[in-house]
Image (cartoon, rainbow, N blue to C red):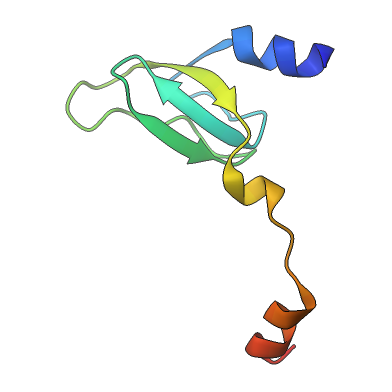
Length: 74
């Protein structure tokens, strides 16, 4: 719980490395799912911006099922 609280309060800037997988919100109200190792992007119209960790993305909760393996032929 302590780590999640720490992530939610931390601010990031365009060009910094993403430290945690999850959903991030920019200063202009946009949301973006980023993965650890990505760089925080520039806003398309506004340029450099600040980013705040907004929580885990839905994709990080989903685990592939055996049925998915069957459908893809693995």
